[in-house]
Length: 130
Image 1: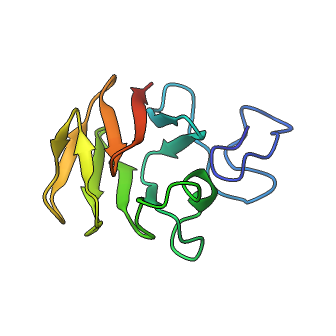
Image 2: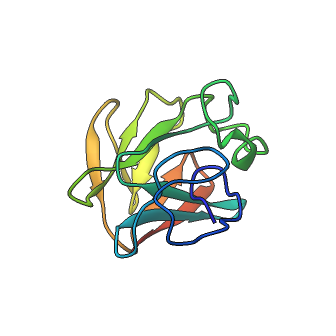
């Protein structure tokens, strides 16, 4: 499955997705997953993903629309070229938290396998790196 558009791949070893034409991560390439109660997010190396309720700013807005306390542009998560996962609060009203610690606005914090990423008071996801 393509990690960007979730299309079924005709050739799992292909270099790019037949549907969205984006380069596909090769086997052994790290992938960041955040498991929220409302859905799983997958981020590949070099991909930045805005988390929030505004579909114009976040391609995964449907994951958060039921949570009024999540900002329209709440935070951004990404996986850098070395395979390190990061999160940054984008000035959210109710905060972004890693393992219970609130991130200051605009500060980048590393994410590790098993970390708890919380948006606002009640949207918690578990970080998986593999």
